[in-house]
Image (cartoon, rainbow, N blue to C red; front, top):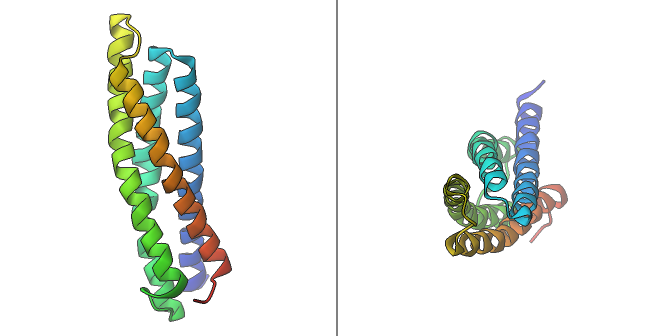
Length: 156
């Protein structure tokens, strides 16, 4: 296998991991939240934080490295056209994802404390969940747009 195909394969897998993990985390957190059960939410959030650490964070690091290497191998300029727009959207995704990771940790801790105390979820949990939910939309939309840009490679 030549370098281009290896880089492309790793880049595609990384994009798939970002998209799949993002969708999976959103689904499982939302389903757990809908139960209103602090112990279930705490357990789900623990798994989500681990998944974000193991899968998402790894892909977040790999994507720009393999993307830059692919652009170099093919001879595409990094800061213009569809690649430049992809990088802008990648930053948007990161600006949404970093607070989401912090929020997930807080949601986990608040749900765990409520479960241990036998109390309902506090209002702070609900405020943070709304922020988590809202931040997911631009992040996920940006990832979808990046995937489209990678596939379509529009000229502009």
